Amino acid sequence: MSIKVHFLNVGFGDCTIVHWPKRTRADGTGKSERIMIFDIYHSENHDEYENVVDYYKANFKNNDGSIKTIFRFVCSHPHQDHICGLAKLFNDSDINILNFWDLEHEWEPEDFEGHPTHKEDWEKYQEVRSSSDITIISTKREDTSLKYWNDEEDRIIVLSPSKELIKKAHYKEDGTKRDVKDIPIDEMSYALLIKVNSRKIILAGDGRATPVWEDIYASCKNQIKNCTILKAGHHGQEASFHEDSIKEMKPELIVFSNSEACDKEDGAEDSYLEAVPDATILKTCEYGTLIAHIPFNSDQPVVVFNSSGQQVY
Ligand SMILES: [Zn+2]
Image (tube, rainbow, N blue to C red; front, side):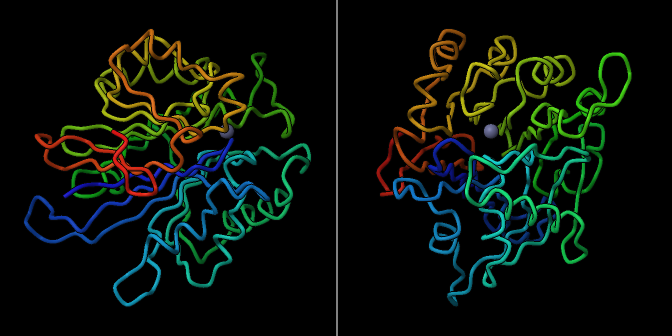
């Protein structure tokens, strides 16, 4: 039995789908399957990239043809490359979403240029986070005793944001509040660690090396140690590369979710490989959508397929 993690090829943006199968709790009672979507991005007018709603509907069907419920949608932070496509997903009458992980923040975008559906998606985001039809969860590292991530549940550890990172994003060094549009919302982005028995998967979000990874390294050094898969921070760009953390994580596999152009311009492949020479880097811009199978039994290897079903790792 494996957890499947789908890293969708969406260009310069993020969309990761984690699929926990039906599993058995420690007390022997069954536990139903769960699906989590971490961010969404849809490039308009780019057929080479995945249409997330179509992908979801094609790949997450129940036996009776209905579409599987999304247990948890995590919005790492509401920048356009992490929320565009949100309105389409949440407005789709075939798709049901139970929990929405949001951040406690006051940020607002400067403008809606750069993506044709940004305004619509931002408005949907605002509507969802104040809705009573969905369970809103705003959490941070210091809250980890909640039931959502204990051993009987999905074993999710919040690495970021911390109280300190939320404060740093909202207040200047002199203690005065930042203007809402000046809040560096990516510097309090969610970074999650998911445990699969002895293995760890880290979804790094968009936080930069300073202050986010310095903060994670200082407080979670032992937790991040020896991970199996790292979804690289900030689309695999140099901005998020933190040498000490990478050496501690020592990932077997590193996934970049990026477009070819941005990867060429700012990708940190060389830095990663210098820090962890044994790691394998897989990029969505090179392989397309990647589906990693992480067995619960650590004697079995992790394997990765592309969307045509060919094994690429
Ligand atoms: Zn981003």
